[in-house]
Structure formats: C-alpha cells, structure tokens
Image (cartoon, rainbow, N blue to C red):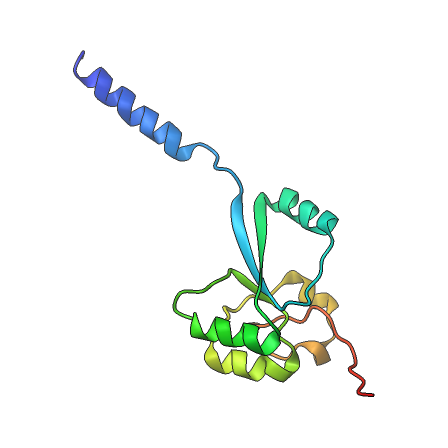
Length: 131
C-alpha cells in the first residue's frame, strides 16, 4: 500500500493540473490596414469569450489575401476580416476558409450571401463611388 500511494498521488496531481482551467486562448484576426474597432467592443468580446484578441494588420485587401493564400498550409491567423466581393472568388478558389453557417445568417438578406457553402460570411455592405 505504501508504494502505490505515491504513484496514485502523482497520477491524481497530474490529472488535476491537466484538467485545471486554462487562461484565455488567443484569437488572431488577420485584417486589412484600414480596419478599425473600438477597444470597448474588443474588451467585451474578450470577456464574453475568454480570449485575448490579437489583430494582424496585413496591408490592403489584396495583400492580405495574398499573404493568407501563401500561408495556407501554416495559417497566420484564426480568422480573416475584410475580403470584399472583388477578391472573394480568389479566396474561395484558394480554399483558405472553413465552412461555418452562423445563426446570425437568418438576419442577412439572401442577396448578400455570396458563398452558398458558407466559407465566407457577409458582415457589412456599402456602395463605392468614384469621383
């Protein structure tokens, strides 16, 4: 019995340490350089989801997309924000996104869902006017 106690103690200690709650995970978001978000929104998201958000500004949309495609086998980020409909076909052809059908899509008009397999989700729209 004396020999098994230290082994059981070490085993139970290991299990306790490996099952203990971990600190926040890191969520890396690749964005274009002109991406802007308030600190309040980031802090609220981090608290609600127990994550630390790191933004990876990666040039304009084309440069950002090129970096993501080149790093496809070893992604630089967990999420990409800012691929517009001009570059969407390149992103989809390169197959750099995983499919995800958000519950929030029920609030998005069908005309704005540009990828039927849900690899890219719409978040905003706007008109571009050239002077």
